[in-house]
Image (cartoon, rainbow over all chains, first blue to last red; front, side):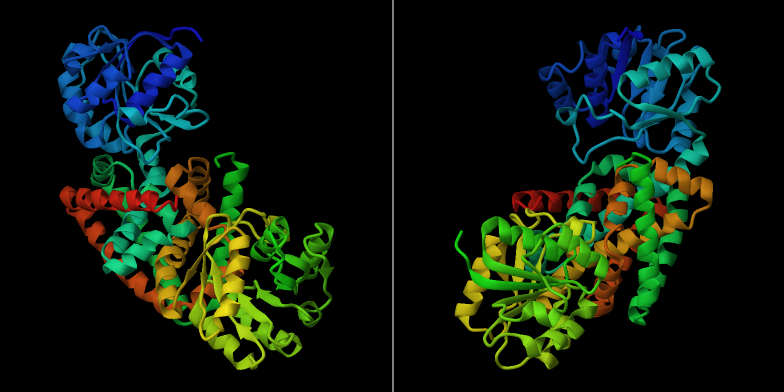
Length: 292
Length: 292
């Protein structure tokens, strides 16, 4: 694959930032890659793993001369990062992020932009329960959607950015901020909240029962613990910043759960079986959509 | 491996029954295997897949001369099956089941037992979201726990049965009925109920949003749909028959979820981060316990 940006800078070298570096190198998408992370321990890992060509001392140094700047930090930190780097960015450079909540990112980044920055928020629908530079994997984005919010960026810049994303292995999809936050609230944020809750419920059990819950963690619970092992700071920020959509979906979920709870209490098997049959159909749709 | 029972009979040839047949044959644990399923279509599959040596016309015919009889049916059906087969079982034969709710199984089977039957309820902690004879896999039980409730069975019979279970690939664990139902309520039943609920919430969304939820099912939701694709009748029966323990765990879960909901509404990030950090530890414990 041809070089798409001469220099890219990645601010935040955790699971996502490190995976972008590895996937970009795999496809030769950038002539030079610079990386920066606010955590010195992470920076040491980035250096020893040789994830980027330039291990920068500051975020400002990383973005100098970069044609594409990627903020791969928790959504609660993206405003501060934008404020720090915006004055040091090259004229006409593209700025993107990888956050899970787009309305809050737009709100937090907007005050720090200037006319010479092409702002193109985005969100890769990919991840694992691991964190940090050493969690990066070159194939993390292969075949996964990467949502782009073109806003008012010039179409040529959007297309160039989409080539880069496609080069990382992803499938590009354009979306509006409000709709993005609603879809993600149900597909990602609420499931994570539920998984955190149920694993948290286990944490509070008396010791013997807790030990046996861990020991005999059958398929349901075991899957939930994997989800509930995701990065605590990243997810704290997601819930604080997509609170409106998450609370709305949570309300619907709670109503539906009460309905099933009542059906169990009153031994209404037909209601349970009816729902369980309908949910099976959704699984088939997902397999048909090639998202499994 | 040596033959452990001369003849075994499997009543209910779904995912679990078919997998027992395949795993037993793999290890040569029975000289003869008979199988029966109340569903004619399943029986046709059993015959064409040649899962057992004797495809029986009735449950009574299947259990004749069997040294071990396994009821691998939904827990709501186990009482009726026991009633049908008990009078036809060989003197001193072992009767077991594979149900997820042990208190209800004990209650439903007890009235139909006679003195010549050695009753040894059990529960393999294994499964997939697929159903029916064609879903059977020989290695389904490899390395997975299989819980046994010895009750008042002679120790020699328990040990022989445990050899059979070990021969299927499982790790044997003895447990009391009440404790079993409590542990399973949290590790398996509640996670399934939650997964069914959240996928059900998606079913009720307006069409465009629902389509996109399916299309962009990021990691959280996709995992839930797999769980929520499990057999509807089996799971209906689980909830109806472990209602007490499930409702108790559900109450705890709802309280914990309300706590997080409130933390999101009031932007209390420290409470979220604190819980999310503690749940990550549970995951480590499960990996350390070798249950991943």
